[in-house]
Length: 422
Image 1: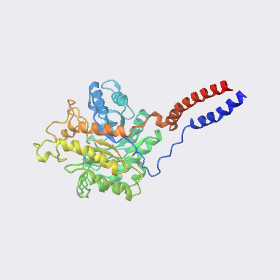
Image 2: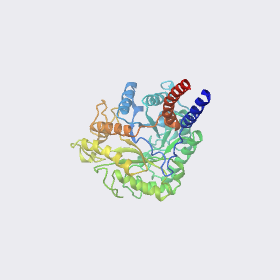
Image 3: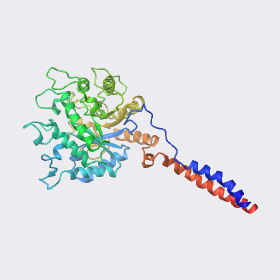
Image 4: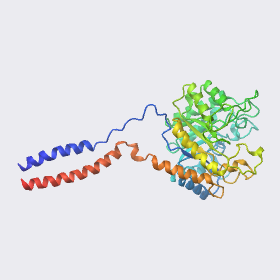
C-alpha cells in the first residue's frame, strides 16, 4: 500500500519535471529581418599596424573595450604581407610577415573585439611599374590569391573582410585613368569567389565609396551614387554580403534630410534606394567611416575638407546619428567611427587630426565619453549574445532545472511523510 501510494504521487511529478526540463524551442528569426543587422552597432577604425610598441596596441584596445565598443576596422595592407608571389616572409627582419598581424588579432581577441579586415594596397611586384601604392594590381587574380591566403590564415578568427577602399576616387584606382565600376566588380567577384571557396561562412563587405558630387567627363573621381548604380548594372549584387558606406555629417546634424546634391549623414538613404531599385533590399549597410570633424575655429577654411563642428556637437551628434539609424533604419548595422586614435602621423594642422576619439597621447576627447556612456547603456539594454545563446534551449534548461531540483526536493519530503503516515 505504501509503495503504491508513493508511486502514484511521484509519477505525475516526475513526468511534469521531465517535460519541463526539455529545452524550450526558440522562435526562428523573423523572415523579414535583414541579415547582419542584429548586432551591437558600436565600432571604430584603428591603425594598429602602424604601431611599433605592443603596449600601445594593448592600451588602444583596452580603451576601445572600456568605451563599450565591440567592433574594430583594421587595415591589413597587402604590401606588408606578400613580399613576392606566394611568399609571406619578411626577409629584411627575417620573420613571418604574418607575425605582426597575428599579434594584433590575438590582442583584439584578448579584449573581446571583433575585426573587420580591410584588404587593399598591392605590393610593388603586383602593380604596374611606377604606379602609386593604392593602385589596383595588374592582374586581379593576384589579389584574389592574396584574399584566399588571408582567409585561410585567419579562418575561424576573422569573419569579415572588406574588398578594397573608395574605388570611385582616382587616388584609389589606376593612375591617369577613369575610375571604373565594371572593373571594380571584376575584382570584387574574384575575391568573393576565392574567399567563399575557402570559408563559405566568411562575410564579404563591398568597398565603401568616398562621398563626392563629382561627375566630370574624365571620370577621375565619380559621384558615389552614380558609381554604386553602375556597380549594380555590372552585376555586383551577387558578390558581396554587406554594402559598405561612408557617412560623414559635415556641418549638418544627423536628422538633416538627404538631397542628391548635398553631402551629409543621411545621404546613405539614397544608397539604400539604389539597392532596393536593383532588388538588393535584403542586405544591410554597414558604415565604414562615420562621424563629424571637430577642427578648431582657427583652422583655415581651405583645410576644412569635412567642414567642422564643435567638440560638443561632435560628441552629441555621433551618438544621435547611431541611435537615429538603429531606431528608424532596419537595414543599418555597425557604425565604424572615424577614427579612434592615430599613432602620431597626422599633424595638428591637418583637419583629419580632429576626428580622433582619443589623442595620440591617449587623452580622451569629449566624443569618447559620449560614446562610452551610450554604448554602455546600449549593451546593458541589449546584452551581446554569449555561448549560451548559441544553444537556445540551454538557458531555459538551466532555469527550469533549478526549479526542478526544488520540486524534486519537495516531492521527496512529501513522499517521506506519506510513507510514515501510511
